[in-house]
Image 1: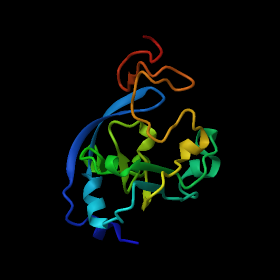
Image 2: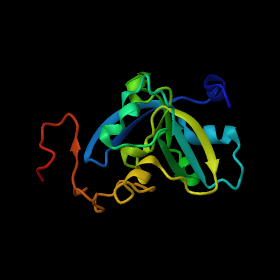
Image 3: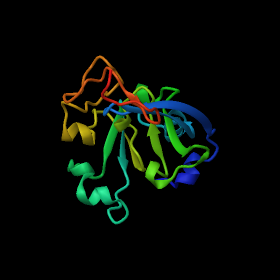
Image 4: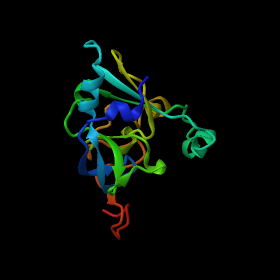
Length: 183
């Protein structure tokens, strides 16, 4: 166990602008502030046998209504879990966000830490990270456990691979005045 402030002391904070795309076909461009996950991993010195990084979210049912009722009625098991291959976690674009829009990350955006992986669908960007583990076996993420046909472990944005319920060939950037379902 580490104190968050001590753990990230001295890590270079960077501002990055990434497009986030949701598996539900919406997207938005977001200015994040944070540090490369690779820098944190190097500091933590995982065992060389670790092939994956597993994340778990905070559990605070009294503060987080969705944890009491299940996310959108989906009945996810809590804590929310997500994972990456070690090479994805070490990629220089993978970010631990501590801020957004030039301000500290608010609770609704995943404070204190949120994962941002720009080539992955948004559900991979776990919010309110409380635990990071380095593991040898591929972790089972929460959405993968809930609906594996729709939410796979890798979840790379790929417009030619459809979700079971809709086409991924188009998206709607939030803030644009277009109907998502028009070509």
